[in-house]
Length: 379
Image (cartoon, rainbow, N blue to C red):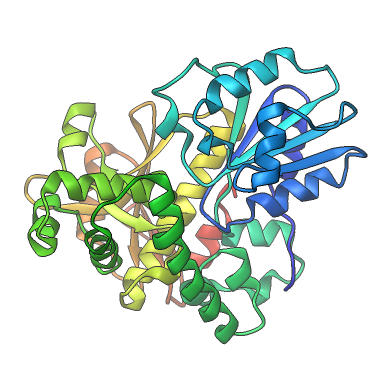
């Protein structure tokens, strides 16, 4: 398989000179590969995976070579007291030791226990490839258009596979690994069939506000259980929630979120929904990059009124709206809802369209080609 450089590598290398670095993100998004690429630039590096019994013993006893310059700890969050372990390791390490931690679960999931690691690490969320990243790292980016993402997703292995058959084989194994390994390892699930049914329903409900009660009726479990399962999917970077924008945080929490998948290829949906999911992943990736690298506090949300007026995405910073975005597969007519929200918030709205021949400026709004807009994002 072809390998392709990741845009975040230089910033991660800089951050390693200052603090521990956490690389987190979905399963098989390229975290281990990226860590080992960084390791090649160090004469003495050690890679240890907590899932490996021999590595686990070395981690527990801290028996890596004294001359180690870069220590890579993979899946260390599975260690019961991992936060205290890393805190002690960082506070007592030699000045020449750099520590890189990788994992496929959200750090936020574990922040409730143990001593704080505040001030001791930088976090980098590694996401699937995007049009913007490919444009910046590949000389052949013209080969990788939107259709390739909709068909294969931006995960490195299927995206760079020689053909669709190889991409499909990867996804079949990927789904099986998510359900049977990651989820069951993450938490003791008593009803395997129920969580699998919730997963399958979500694959068909992308882009619509999620009702825990409705899914609970279909699966015959409680709404609380459905929420727990979706929280697990989110913690493991399988799905992410896009919540409604609101000045009042409590109101945003009450309203129903939309669910999107990091892997667009997991969707059971038409091209329009797959395109919306791809845009959601691209926008989220750009937002997380600006937060992680530039210290921003941006949030991806959607807008909806009590009367049902809705626009697909908004980006805000410190609760102040910055961008209003509507997504269309094939339309050169300005969305009335986008007009409404643009006027209400006095912001220039953008309607991004996949299949459009000519861009337009109408009523202070922009109708732009999706490829052009998505290629211009931060990453």
